[in-house]
Image 1 (tube, rainbow over the protein chains, first blue to last red):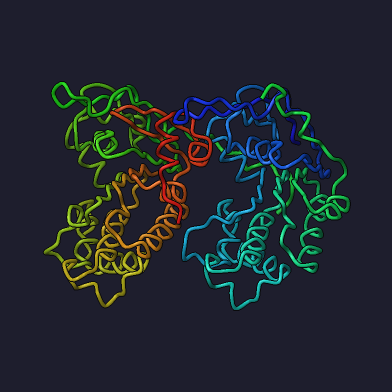
Image 2 (image 1 turned 180 degrees about the vertical axis):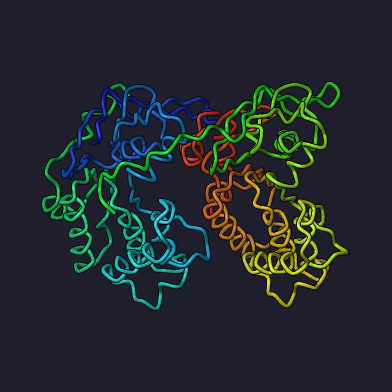
Length: 226
Length: 268
């Protein structure tokens, strides 16, 4: 479902003396449907960079990133947008939303964008919010004023609202209490069971061992002559 | 909701707007030059750049307010298919700007008739496309006022009695009432309080999604484009220096100027 091959990337900082920073070289990995693969490696090794490249957020210099038949490294913006709408989900560490939009609608939005009926999308959103223990009295409020942990759970609910066939998870269990952590791991297990290909960064080792089938060490992709 | 469901087969629609080699000069000075892009139905494109970068000139050329010196602006019309709006006759272009196109000005005073009631402002555009039944027009106007969160009892008030944010929402209602397919927006949230901006952004996003609108939004506010635009073009000295997915351009800018723009935003 997700296949990365021969992938390289560098950053050029034009306003800082044109400094060139190679960040990725010959990266390759494969995630099959129903499989959860963990990216490991020290901080700064390029785990998040690789995730962002797969999501089309960072450009690739060289190589291929094929998700559901679309090569993200080459696809036109609107093909990547469609891929993100229908196939590829991403739970980042930060919630970025239009201020003033109610939490329920923030979570339902990915479904509404797919043309799912309002009532169905909202019901799914409420179900996820309840499972992630966001108190019902907060559903009508904007999450911008929520605590860090609450925002993260809203972000997770939003990421799981649509059953994406491919899912990227950046530290989904960080800063969660035991009960919510268990809920998130349960959501991951359910997504796997329904055939999703999942690639994630989990600093939480126990969580990683519980849900991940394999590990890929990105240190192998760190350019040596950096 | 099943996993791996293939998307509904649909005949892939062509671009709504195709811009080819557009150039506008002011004497020997370049307004904008060498601008080409496609905009597809339902897409929102942001154009960012500093004052004088040519973004407003470009927008006005696209919307037919300025005549470009060369290039094509091909719009997929409902009746005749793709037509170059630069070479089409003035009456046809005016008809487009009353029906399929909408233009939201930065200053609502430029897009509203300040001496006419709120309902009249919305109804006027309907009448311009042939609506005649007073009751229907008023109902339609009321519906649109509520969509942009203006209370029904304000329908007979003049926009001069409205706050800046309300005026801007009224301008949007006036523009969208005829069900346009393409909306041009020039700094739609400029000059508004931050709290009012957020409300307007939310409103615009909802309208774009529900109506399947395409939009071209000119702004210098990177936070606005991140929330509203699918795609982004960065302009400098009349040229497009970088274009791509909005979050990609903002998170991994390739051009030195874009890097400077992105790194100059103050963190709140």
